[in-house]
Length: 375
Image (cartoon, rainbow, N blue to C red; front, side, top):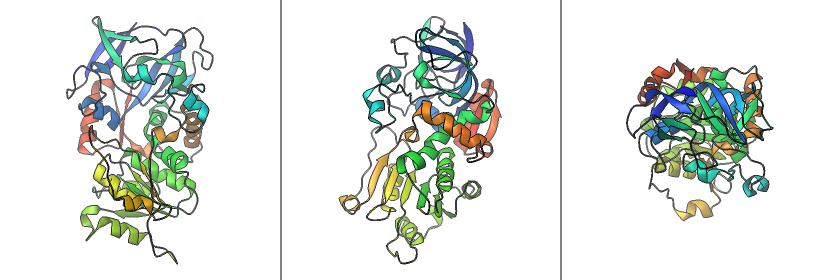
């Protein structure tokens, strides 16, 4: 069949809107009509050429929501007509990683997904006879896409596509980093570095679990209002801090009899390795945990003095907020529909597929939190 898609034919080039060929689902695969898709910084990371694993030509996009329109042989967990969110982190529930219950990083199709193909080693997309790569196993910048059954989460049918598509990455990554990775709880203190789409979701994740102090750190002063909208209690602009930023943040977190200071949890949402070090060192000695969410460029490394770690601070990384997609994503959709978390204010721009490059321009200019393409 034919479907319209935004294709990255080369790195560092605008996406081209073309009609591509899409083969139907094979065994244990489903075809989904994408109704809405978010434009994420991870898409830009790959398109820019900074992603060492980036493949071209490819149909980008990994943050979507839609309806199952066809299923392949053997599919039992979803049916035609089901509303679903594609999962770039699948959940097979049978590989050693899934069975361990220690990680959400399912390994059952990791090898082929990283090669931009389906589990059988082939692509379902082509253009004028040329193979097009799948992106992160999702390719939601296409009106129709094919995914493995284990890479779709069935959700309730009353959830709006143009809002819950954001749960396919940004919301789950931010809120999940608090709930699943940090396992933060009532009364904690948290510092969030970078108040973009991910950082704001970390902020509301901290609010959700009952944090007492939520400090947002960003060099853009306009982000203060955004942070406070989602539960931030204090704002710090590093450009206006006199002296050492770590010392300033540690001082802010000294409370009562605890005159050591430092946050219980810090979160890097910037991808900047220098900020990652600052986030670790702003943790409380003895028990502070720093969660790395942002993705740094190829070849970059993090560093700190060993003293920071031997005195009890912990560095952790998280992918997809530690969420098990088919299990946890429907629950997060419920949280949104029940008013426990907010998404609507973060969807700052609604675009058509033909306007998708405008969405990336808005991202570069810092004028959007999340742009969503509606098909």
